[in-house]
Length: 340
Ligand SMILES: [Zn+2]
Image (cartoon, rainbow, N blue to C red; front, side, top):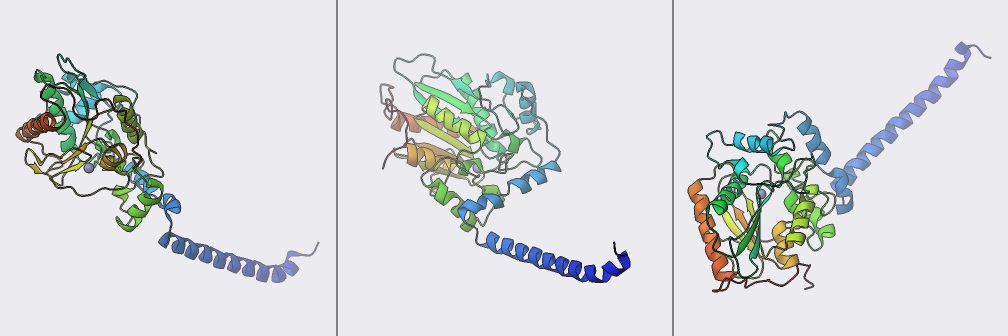
């Protein structure tokens, strides 16, 4: 064996060359990765999803309140968003748990309000709030409507199914987030036509990779959007009402003449997005979807909630029910994707 002093002069240049080559290779890999990220295709967009970043960000956020799996803690979390108590008693709404869970396992509470008596099968209406977790007024509105529907003697043959908070993980986070715990915008995650080719392209080119509008790795990748999808196909609603904020308009997708106003909101059809619920319900299934965009994210005056409730029912009377109270639209049709 040669003494180390005789090996060193021959070994070091090789090591130096190797480490230089490795450095160059690392630099090349880095540059290639940057170039790929700049020209990424929808398929590779998943790798660039904001999910990891969003999750990392949330680790530093203390939860606003752990909503747990109990209705009492969930209701306490909702009430905490209304320090002045301007919200109906959540525990009296008769919310039920069902199968739906968020990414973090929070139940997607919902309730059915059925007409006191009906000679004909009632019109089925699905009302969804809190699809975006930072639009708490949408949760407040749906809770207000549940309480209102329970108080009123429902003369109309309408079966309401209402879920005030579809995205509890975004809602109970501090600060609240539009996206769910996986960093996905649930209202871009529905299985609309050409989702596979359009959703990521739209996210990259039009939103410039806005992390608040990431459509998810695939359509219906999220438990919350899968639950809504399952509700649509089991309950078979003839009208879907989705509540959002804060753009202050009324949007509509689907066949019958849209409502021109609900309370202080005027109709303004803003177009469709890949993966949105309005696009899925209105275009793919052919069921009317009223999208309410409230004027404020956090403030929901009860008088406005009352006016919207009254106007919605008037529109239902005029367009979805006949004079004798039977369902005019889609009564016997089974919801399935339209072929046109
Ligand atoms: Zn929204």
